[in-house]
Length: 55
Picture 1 (cartoon, helix red, strand yellow):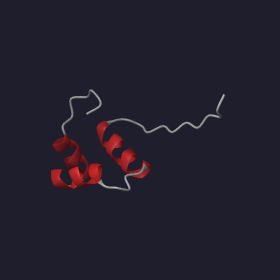
Picture 2: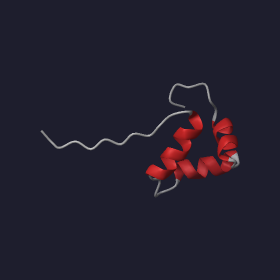
Picture 3: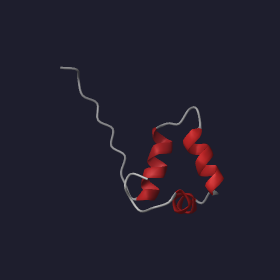
Picture 4: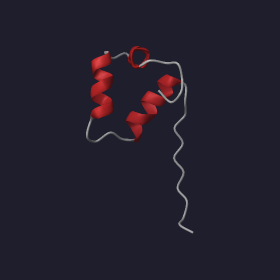
């Protein structure tokens, strides 16, 4: 994922959920920033959201 050498299984372990739970989390209809932040944090990344006005 994201070019890193971490597997979905390892991410699930860091989130203390089963691999199946991570699959459901990634596929859920209302996946949001909080979900992305949890997963990215487990992968060693920070989620940064940047809003800029249109040119």
